[in-house]
Length: 285
Image (cartoon, rainbow, N blue to C red; front, side, top):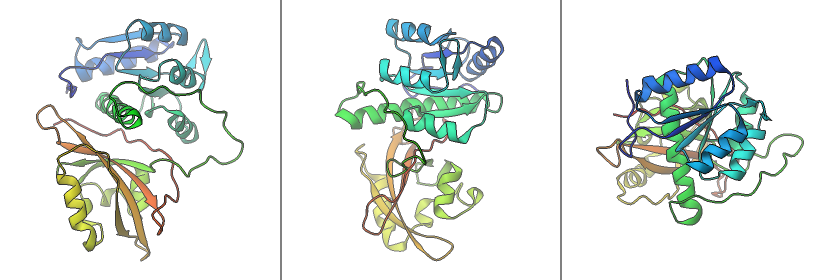
């Protein structure tokens, strides 16, 4: 099934992968998702990727972490410093939750494991990466253009700082029902993922907060304004969750769905924790 970009056509993609078989797998999946007309470039080295971006910036980079001239997160760091205007989706040969979290915290939009992701899932990840990066750029400086970033700071020893950023991302339909979500989103509510998918958030929040939530869903403008809703954990404890909505278009309706960023809050309204988590499950109508 071919995916369709919200801008009217397939995205311009740059695949950075030196393994011939892995590159062929990725290129085949992209062809299945968007057809042979999709503008996809392939390079084998980080240096070549930077040259390709300088010549013509792609909509998204699909990046392997093991390259002849860069290893691990070196490639992510280099792209973030030299091409902060281009979103990155990491494609790794290994499932490593710690590495995935580090990559996303540094600035990558998603982390996928080659051989386990489908063509549709890869296309959805790319679409989300572009949407999120556009949203971050706009909220960062008030414009839709790129936002310059400084070189990533060296990581401190010990456990990562989790006091900043959203804790989970979900995709909601136009009525506010959960279409896709990460395990982290369900865990935050104390529910199995299967009991969250398909359920409207309004049905899970405190009755007194229902009108506030409906107003947020029906809001006409696109301001990324956080609202705080109360939920009840199965243990009986009250949970306060900040939710920021970003409308998603399917080419026909500008508000066909929502990208929802969820963050736990303390009773005083300040964030109590946070590690950026990514969902790879948004499908067009």
